[in-house]
Length: 139
Image 1 (cartoon, rainbow, N blue to C red):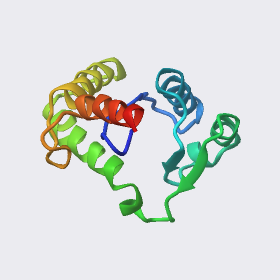
Image 2 (spheres, rainbow, N blue to C red):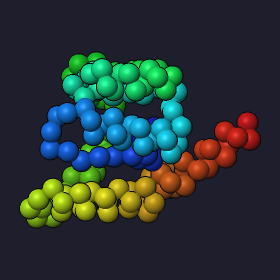
Image 3 (tube, rainbow, N blue to C red):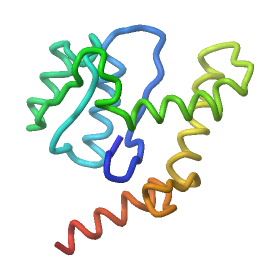
Image 4 (tube, rainbow, N blue to C red):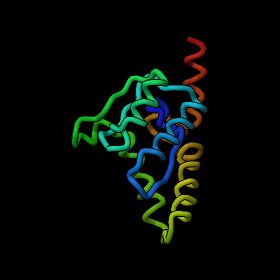
């Protein structure tokens, strides 16, 4: 997630705690949007392992991690998960991973392109992201 715009740049779904799917999402986000200046995560095993750390280091990204048990350090992600659960997951009778992926994919598209945020002057994350890039170029 881009913190300035709240746009979800890439995501994956997995039923394991392996780092592979996280690294895939990271690589996709970097390929599409370029490397971020800083990457902040919690201290989950996917984010403290060598695959994740090496990918960020090789891309020249500074690494930031939340304090242990400090969910407020990454409040935008925590809020994203809460919204996803309340607005999509809990409203569906999900029976398998394929259906879960479809539900999440649809909601992520809605979140990025249709759901305005009060913190973004009622813009969608998509609109705020592109507006921010234009402002950055002009500066």
